[in-house]
Length: 351
Image (cartoon, rainbow, N blue to C red):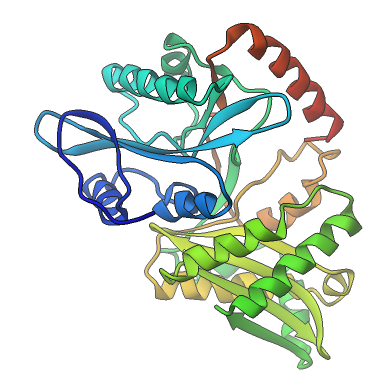
């Protein structure tokens, strides 16, 4: 996105300036920021050929008090505006909520979208759900971003963090540390991003799930690395890749957004070492939390991410439940059929 100035007139308006978005975030420190509501999120999707709208609300005093990044998603039979980890606003202010709805609906109508999909980055509670329902939102059949996640509080010292780990995780860490053939590489190289993207494709084939495109992973890396907001962590043994993570450092949190582990990696228990390295980096950057980016319930044993979730829990995470993804129907008749289709697809994928 090119840099530009903004006319501070009252109301919602589009911005194309990263410094203005950063000022909005800095002026509202109560907002929770991660890689998906960072300005680079919009830049990345633009590089992938998608239409992006970055909107801010300017109040009567000229203050930036609300904002959101909307990405136009076009499927085969329908299209929608996706607002991941947003909108960012005061959820106790019904007036600004209504104003956001009006603004997002206008953009959706401009692009002939069927609905607007949001996943607010705020802990779930009945009042927020009621506020959403009051302005026309309905709970979505598919998630947009993780709705339950596990955090580590990085204000805790290393001894306390280790104490909170499960006994089985401690054994895995000790086993991996005793193996002097395991080597850890930390990289901000495009070459390693290419390797990671390829391994992600191979991992998806092995585990039988639909992978994200190599282009998306590489564009994300290229965009965030310019601001020193991403690193790749890789574990090798005798030159063979065991595990790899792509970690993002945005706002006050580190996010475990992409990760893969090979069958050999499971055998040598190398994955925990990558997290320990990333936690150390996050602490060095004085970040507040380490976000494991998504866990499923302890009773969801048939979910395809159940095993991974148990691994994340073994670090002693604090679980946080966000307001679930909600949709604002724009073409109400068509949305009924879309919701039915997505509900069936969700069940078929065991999500």
